[in-house]
Structure formats: C-alpha cells, structure tokens
Image 1 (tube, rainbow, N blue to C red):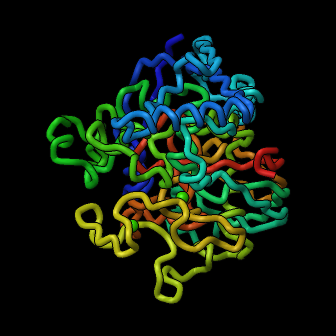
Image 2 (cartoon, protein in one colour):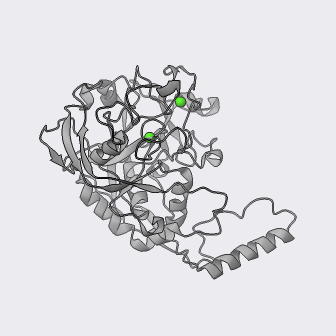
Length: 419
Ligand SMILES: [Ca+2]
Ligand SMILES: [Ca+2]
C-alpha cells in the first residue's frame, strides 16, 4: 500500500514555533512496507564457538585476512536465516493513538525477534564492543511536569502540573549506532530515511562536495538541507560513515523506526511524562537534569552549541557534532545525555494545551499529527533553540528524520536478557 507521508523538517533549532511551523515540508509517495527478515541466528554456544574457530582457522591460513568477514545479515547461507516480507501498510496513513501504533509494531516485531536481537553472531565482537543497552529502574513518584516560567511558551511548556508516574525502566543511554546495527542485522530492517532516499542534515557538518549537489533548502531555516542518501549509516550523506561513531547516538531514525527498535528490544518508547520525570533525576523545578546552573563547577554537562549559531561552533564542550552516549556526567537516576547530544522521541502525540488537573501516568492526546521529542541536541544554542531543558519540548511527524534526532527506550519490566 502506498500512502502520502508528510515529512516536516526537523524544525528544532529554529527561533521558535513560528519558524518551526514554517519549515518546509515535503510530500512523498512512499511504500511503507517494512521489510523484516527473521534472521534466525539461534545458534547454540557450540555452533557459535565452532564458527568462531572456523573463522579463526581461515583467517590464520590467509595472508590477506586483515579485516573481519563481510557483514551480510541477509545471507541465508549457513545460519538458517529465512526472510519474509511483511505485507504493505504496516503503519497507518492517518493518526492513531500511540498505544495502538505500538501494539501494531509489537505484533510485527515478535518475541522471537527480541530473542534474536540479543544473541551474538559471528559478525559482532562482544569483547571489543561495550554494550550500551542497559536500563535503570526509575522509582515511581509525583513530580512537577512543565513549568510556570516557560522559556518558549508557544511550545506548550506550561503550565506546571502535578503528575504521578509509576516505576519503570529507562535506557541509561541514547540508542547507539552499535545497538541499532544489531537490530538492523537481526531483522534486515530498512529505515524510513533509506526508503525515502534522503534525510535532513545540518549544513555546518556537510562536506563541500555534498553541499554542491543540493539545490533545495528550507527557507525559514536554511541550515537544514535535504541530503540524498543521508541515513543512519551515512549521517552526513554518502561520503560519511559511522565507523568511528559506533558509540554515538543513532540519528536519522523516524518515530516509526524508533518504535520498531524498542519493540524488538523488548522495550517501548517512554511517554513524555516518563521522559521528563527521568530527565529531572529526582530534582524539583530545575532547568537541567543536574540543577539549574548551565555550567556546574564551571564544566560542561551536556553537548550543545557554543558560539555563534549557525555560523561558528566553538565546540567548547568538546563536540561539534554528536558525542559518545557515555560522555558527560549522568543525572541522579544514572541517565546520560538526557539533554543535548541527540533529540529523543517519546510516545506522545503533540499538543500545546495541558490540563492543570493532577494526572496519573498520562500518555498524551489520543491522536495527532506530530510526536513529541525532548531534550534538544548538539545543535541547540540558547538564542535559537533553548530546548536543552527538561521542561522543553518540540515535535515532528512520525516519519521525520534528521541528523540530530535519535531516541532511547523505556520498559515496564526489565527484559530478561538485561536482568
Ligand atoms: Ca557541542
Ligand atoms: Ca539526548
């Protein structure tokens, strides 16, 4: 089935909602079929070590074996893999509530896929790769969501309201390229940026070669450029890669892609309330996860933009683009980079009108056109995008992708493989 998908530019580092809303949007006919293969890498430990031994022997006997074997997750040979193309129309054209969307995804990304995703295949080097899929228990409680002193009122940061949140688990880190690659390899997943054939990239991180090929820009935010073949594996277009960034947040992932990943991992996206509660780290009415000082002890606690946006990033915090998800101190709950680095999707539909009634585990509006994202990114500068605060928020359509937009997952119960 084909449907028309409206994709908004990642309108986050703009001067405010007006510019956000003015961002150019693009219409694509897209086949939303999500291809999933059940790469049944259910090899027992004997088979696994046999394969490793075989690979070692082959490598030892070859003078040319200087690099790992080619990664070919879709190859059926030797692994008992089977491929199955899902029926088209996996995601609806029209808005549905988050729960039903998540349930649809859950039906498609089944338990067996979750198990597959956590097994180690010969393609991976667990001793060389530090996993970043750990979760921490966030104790339940009541907190003040939003603020009565909104920095960007048009984003619906206010009013402050009392919200109860039951305990849940939260990813310690933004989902990394390494973790997302495991998902892609296990399920033969194709992201929406790959299907659309382009994604939005901040001009300041593009090569001159790529920039010279671009004729289209976003009038209200000329620093966002649609780059052909930009996707999670090629964050700045075809002449870039993630080889040296496997521990950085995956970007160019849509909300739909994020839901698929979290479901595969036995997790889910956090609600906005959960995300904000987790961001605050047990503190009340503070701007940031650690308090209200931008530079506690004179040090940078997050990856944002220093200098003159969008012309010059001094990268005083050490990073002009994404940083490793383990960078900077964690907050009181042990969570890293809740603000800054990459924006993070939540499960809620976007609305700027909030009740002042006390709420119990709110899940946001029942429907909408955009999803809420939280935390700001490495592109945020106070003059343009003072959204690296726990109460701050922004939005994009569920199929939007950009070079500063990622996610982390939550869960009601800790997945077995993490306990
Ligand atoms: Ca920075
Ligand atoms: Ca973040």
